[in-house]
Image (cartoon, rainbow over all chains, first blue to last red; front, top):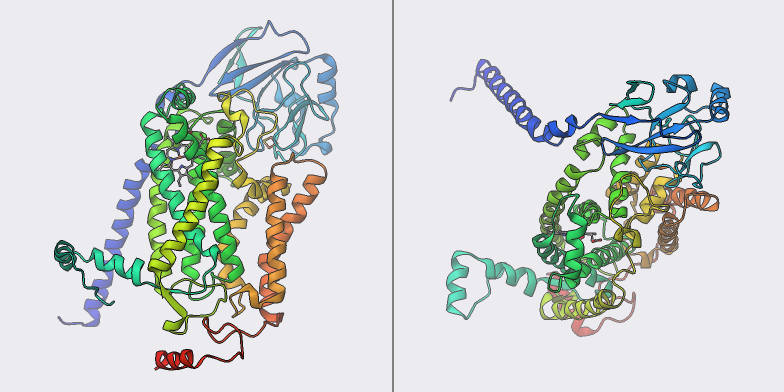
Length: 176
Length: 418
Ligand code: HEM
Ligand code: FES
């Protein structure tokens, strides 16, 4: 076989081209094998629920299940709303105004999943610990949330999330 | 490799075509092993025994277990109550995981003390750390299968660790779950992986043993074998010693299974999983507690996760952190002291991991975490430079330096060195 410089360049080209196509092919085959683990169509389809909130007394809260996770709906008292509204943004780790977290101030709708590592915070039922800020307390690693579900103390990085929802009528909300 | 002469004609015929018998003879019979190994060298074969026990009992459990959120808990209760000897098989599997970790942790600290990670055994050590990682993943997924409260919340907290990764973290968690929370897709994939991973462990164990047999075992003196007089054949000497160790191990293991089967477990896992209610005090299995303490010691989510994985990562690079040419802690007065401090530190971390993350426990966790990393990243590299080690014996068969070598031994040594 002749090994001229010219030939060498062609061979390098063939090697690089082959390896590139192999890599592209491998990636194309890998994609479906990885993507199969993402939520399936039927799991995605289960993603909205409707809740009637008229039965919740002022000062009480209910927990509903949405996408396998708890959603807290609290009928807040005027005092709780005032408390949440008066907080200075400088005191918040994840600054967000209370009014930006609600559709109607009386009803706080938040995901009951601690933003640290996913436990369900306490404070829904009467008699449960509500933490230093009178909202919720996560027993797993000690995160305290206020009456707007905002993180105030502990390891959680962000506020309890507000799920996408809308009031269909005065009393019925659709989550998801 | 000296080819043994087999008497049995069938064995001879097969061995000529497929030399498995020669291989076994070489690796398990004549395999020359340092003559001075202590009982701490039994832990390797015990780990193998534990792995086989887990695979056998696991496959049996899989014949009766249903990986579905509506049936998993009941199917495990059925194994406990109705399946013939199901309670026994499950208790062996459940406690087997704990005993497997006890054995492997002692095995690792043995290696730490006697410098078994040093040249030429770096890859042997790294494969061992890889086995530890695979075991952790396997045990974590296995614990999810009975679908009790601890299963569910353990799975939730641990998978959520990945959400600490910037930008793509949340998508990774959804991908791991196959949904928006730990649910049926999560359970079925964990079952498939829990079945697979022990066999991956078997693969790595084989590599671990190939690497071991390349240079042979380290020994309590940490010096190289210098000739035939330093070794004895593996069989019958160490086969019988390993067998005796296995008897002792099985006696303790059986006592746990029959008398205290739930001692190491957590009662909350006998409550079916409830996605709407987290138990008041969630803790992982005891063998994860030191790592859990490190996770919680760091007040930042991403930081906690990084330090937790970092605790294992330092083990991977250990052969390059400790540069001292002397292997065994016996001849390293300062290293020896720090070794015991490290062991105490790890036990303390384990204790703290089981306590609530508040008050004094948090402060102590931070100190203990800091010490763990300082040991590996500062103390060991420093000791390699400043420590004055004690003189090493000339050979394994002559452990007392300067003492008169017997004439016969000296003659043998002379021969071996030729
Ligand atoms: C490295 C080896 C293994 C380890 C460390 C391990 C660990 C565990 C652990 C900690 C549990 C939870 C026990 C409980 O609390 O109920 C478990 C359950 C289970 N494992 Fe394994 N396992 C191993 C190998 C296997 C293998 C090879 C299989 C075969 C399929 C298997 C099948 C199962 C099944 C079906 C369960 C659920 C039943 C139950 O919870 O008792 N395991 N495993
Ligand atoms: S999960 Fe809530 S504080 Fe860690």
